[in-house]
Length: 306
Image 1 (tube, rainbow, N blue to C red):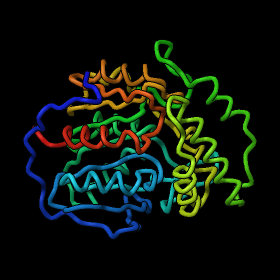
Image 2: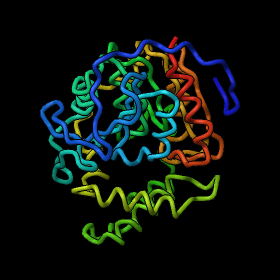
Image 3: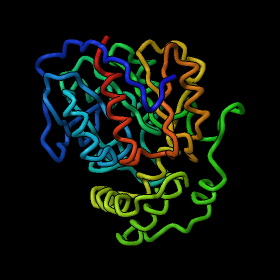
């Protein structure tokens, strides 16, 4: 286990690959695994690659990515299916599975000419990261799991804490907005972000509102982007396979996460061999700017090689 003030020396950098493709600022549409995905790269393609896996790529905020790139990393962020400028499906009827999303991540590395990358998965992106490390171990240099859990959508395992009553009340009882009304959708997204953030630290509404506006403006079908992950075929369980993960793993989890409570991060760190746990005090499901001074150096240390 590691803590916010961990100051261990960085590991020796690994040798980066050559012939890597860069993508234009703002993102490019690229064919990956039979579909069109929007992806962007930042930094020097000769540096070790970090693949950020979340939902819409802009949820990996610009300055966060720039800090990683400034630490001599080649940063890749992309829109998952149903988010941003990537391929979109009807709400409640996604034409893909969780394993397709895993194949997308591996396929994006192929498009960029990268044999391997340091994979950083947040929330549902953590499921993709775990399965990528299990099913494509040769593509994963290291694994970082942020606010993730070892089970797919649906009821959690009995030994794991499930979504808080408050977050479930928001999801199940809050009236949905008119999805064509930009202001109403942004209000809804901000309220959802506030619920995910928990109550341990002040909520930065201005930052959440700006990000929600960017998400709305780039998303073809907002309700699909919010809900289709729950409707996809998630395939077989993988928690029992976690001991087979060989990639060096860092688990980052907020102590006050109401969506995937902290015990989920503890389980990941205990069940993945050699994994380290970084607990972020007073932190919910997201990564507020206040913790970037801890999280970015931790990721840079973890991805610095062996």
